[in-house]
Image (cartoon, rainbow, N blue to C red; front, side, top):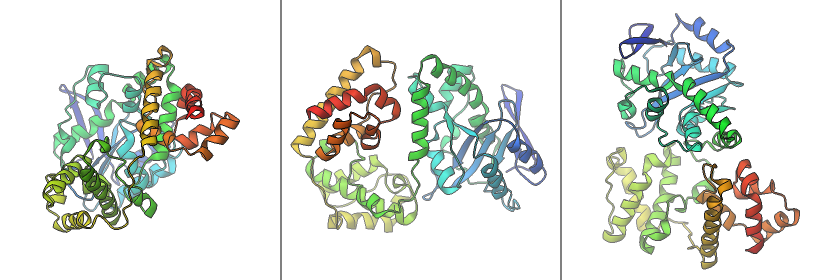
Length: 403
């Protein structure tokens, strides 16, 4: 990465912090920071997801305190003497009871918990907090600009992070991803407290941890369940296009499991839909996306074979008229809840997936809920968060009693 152990990040010509690339010379200092009293660790990852078919971590940035140096753990350094693995071991040993501070933790959690096996049991997330607080913009650059009045360049978002040494602009980009997180979180935490939304954030943060999805789907039933329901408004497409979409969804799930990657790395939803539309009309497959799938003829052939054969074992029944009526009724209920002045401070009411879960409840599922009038039981059966059960659980039970 660099011939020096220390690098400096300059903002506006002024040195603001030090970057330490973890190595044998500064190991004792890194270990001392891990053992320190700071309970909030800022972290960010850089991966090669924009450059490689099989994504992997290329850099970990850490800042243990608001005034401390930034640490870089670099798995791409040649002959690093095992320092990356040693650093991960230290984070695992001392990080189990820390709160990890992210900006938009969803993708990073997948790498940290599945690929790197780090123990994330508690987190803070400035992007999640900004969404709950209904900030106008929730990107890191926009938040730093609006809260701290500092401009940071986010042009490195799609850079190739595999090459070494990293140029100075990418080092600065990497450092700035954690440089301001403590200050941003201080503002977000205060705003959450003032808005009485701390409990909402805690529920959603815990859900992020529990629902972080690994990049590999091992269970056959997980793959079989990929029937196209993850595509928004799939029922608005012609029947033949729907068939192709559902077929491709299941086929890419198998291929993702085979190649140990997220389904989006096989075929993103946008390109999957355009591929299905083209195939439904022309009976041949055409990939437009710029990822390696376009160049990987074997994968393309497998997806085309899946379409030609209607993907063996794919069983799909269109939603019944009754189910569509339930969803329509639930959306009407959600609209009424959203229009209630008492609910306007909540970030959202019920998600589409939660509406689907409620609509799919059978009479056998509903009977004990209504008999006990147990709001807490709604959480397991409808995917509602605790704060949603407290705020809207009674209305959901009323709806279930009439449908």
